[in-house]
Amino acid sequence: MAEYLIAGNSVAAVSAIQAIRERDKEGRITVISPEPYTAYCRPLITYVLAGDVEEWRLPYKRESFYQQNKVEVLYNVKLDGVDVSERTAYLSDGKKVAFDKLLLAVGGKPFIPPIEGIDGPDVYTFTTIADMKALAGRLEDIKKVVVIGAGMIGMKTAEALAKRDKEVVIVELMDRILPMVLDKEGSSFAEKALDRAGISYVLGDSVVGVGRDASGKVRRVELKSGAKIECDAVVVAVGVRPNTTPVEGSGIEVNKGIIVDDMMETNVEGVYAAGDCAESYDIILGQKRPNLVWPIAYRHGLIAGANMAGGRRRFVGGFPINSIGFFGFQVVSAGMSAVGEDEEASIEVLKFIDESKGVYRKVVIANNRLLGFCVIGDIRRAGLYTGLIWSRMDVSYFKELLVEHISLPEAIYPIDGALPAMNFSDRKNIRRFGWAVFPYSYRKLFTGYSARIEEICAFDDKGVCFYDGADDEG
Amino acid sequence: MNHRIKRVYPIEENCMGCRLCEVACAIEHSEFKDPIMTFFNGKPQSFTTVEVDRNFSFSLNCRHCDEPYCVEACITGAMHKEPDGRVIVYEDICVGCYMCVVSCPWGAVNPKEGAKKAAKCDLCPDRELPACVQACPNRALVFDTTEELVFELPEEEEEPFVEG
Ligand SMILES: Cc1cc2nc3c(=O)[nH]c(=O)nc-3n(C[C@H](O)[C@H](O)[C@H](O)COP(=O)(O)OP(=O)(O)OC[C@H]3O[C@@H](n4cnc5c(N)ncnc54)[C@H](O)[C@@H]3O)c2cc1C
Ligand code: SF4
Ligand code: SF4
Image (cartoon, rainbow over all chains, first blue to last red; front, side, top):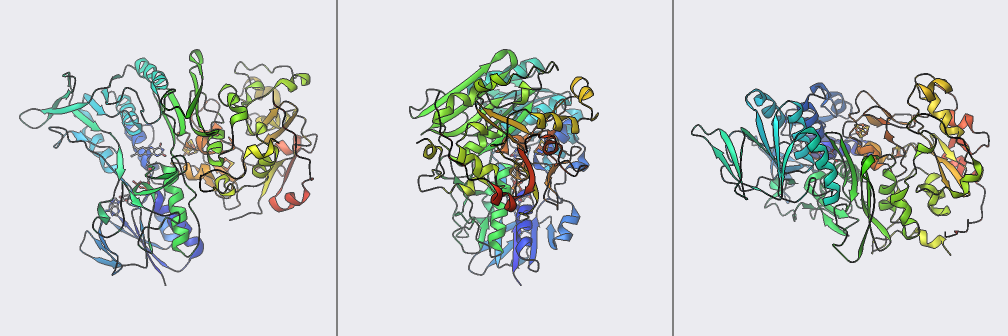
């Protein structure tokens, strides 16, 4: 009977458990969980802090999931190290556990920049339930908070704190909000939403010191520009890095994250890695890198689990996919979305902007293929772009449609309610971006099946889909 | 994995782009189940979209994927695959983060009109035939399993691509 050991108890671990159990009903699965909870919806912690979601909704899986899948969970212990030749794992409670297959799904850890005075009370990170409870427990004593970093976690935390009537100041090193997702122009939409909500923000500046009073309480932060902001708490949200601490010195190869091949296996046979801690193939960059988002963690776990249980599944690759809303601002994006118009000659950026409606669509094209997009405001059917990134179809002959008219049902359901007269002769002139503009054989392939697009489109060495729109043009 | 679940497949050769499927879907999924009430009092929203490109069209809805992108992306577990193969969203768990909306390559999940929730095709659990399929006057939508459909598909000439 195979001994499966899974370090970590979050989405990657859950999908791995499901994949293992699909193939192996008997093997023993043990999960190591430093946190005293069943797998939970990590992104929901900001919603709970805000009071939008009740705490009982945090679990992603409940006890019954582990029982049904016959999984033993060791709560409140960590993986401290791995001996790959003995095939044993060292746990923080001093125990040793032998394994046949090990999955490292230990996630990410928040990066804390070296800032003077940052160590000590009143400085928070925000990635776990414990972090959330620590901050929630102090809310009564806090009036004003400085959030360092205007990324996803920083913005969601800032929104949550503002909803709890705290004064919030966001400080971001780059010149824009959500710097990984938006360019300067896109950021102006977010800035407008912040202005409307009365949230202050400082862009292009960084915190160089945290000032404390004699009792050690935070009183202010100092910025590089010399400005000082009074506050009584600081939230550090400058990014999450892959957690590679448990495998340090074990012989398991690590770059920025734990390096895996396309079967999610590390350089050590039988040891797999999945989720935020892993560094896997990015189909847009054409190289390995950590992609710390939920859908990729799920996919990693699914593929790793299948392979651990004797399957042969390949992780074709991934790319970051994001969706974030705050203060009435909504943006979705995938792939490379923050590149500016003139940054690189080989990259073409197309945009459609309607300030009055708050609509902004941007696509990034290189080599006739879609590498990324960003949509603000009306996000209906934005997933169509994601499909184009997956399939790597040649978009050159309809690229102007990409941003102008995404296929929307508004023609039949106008916002003001009245149904427009249907004029069939008009149909000849309707040309909107959607599956209908894709080549016939390509459409048939995907609308007739329900398989994964990236798996149908095998990628050659250059990462180009062989089922490529150009074939149909002749 | 269940490859034999029934799904709604578009037959674009039959579609004339009349959008009756969209109307039928919007009525079926409104609280009123009545055309007039739906369009004037409700928030009409169709989960199938008739895609049009000049001289042809077809109606596209959720593929109820074998390994759904939307389910993988859902940060709450609200989007899930039922044992019978249908991919549906539990609205009371959904927080409206729209990760599923960006993830679905078919553009088949969208924000619900007037609520911070996701909305998508549920294959009309209360009906024998989904409303869109029943409404189609041209048999341009069929409700069937993958395999049977693949054998049924007519061999068509490749459609020439005309620029302009
Ligand atoms: C506030 C917030 C909001 C987010 N919002 C989004 C969003 O909207 N969309 C999105 O795509 N992504 C979002 N993310 C990112 C997303 O949560 C992660 O990508 C996802 O949780 C990664 O899952 P994972 O399984 O790799 O690891 P994690 O969820 O990071 O979990 C790691 C697990 O490993 C355990 N662990 C840690 N160290 C050890 C050790 N030494 N030994 C054993 N176990 C260990 C932890 O206790 C935990 O159970 C958000 C993250 C945060 C913090
Ligand atoms: S909504 Fe999209 S991703 Fe989800 S099952 Fe339907 S087609 Fe697949
Ligand atoms: S919008 Fe709802 S269903 Fe979609 S991913 Fe978010 S929580 Fe899940």
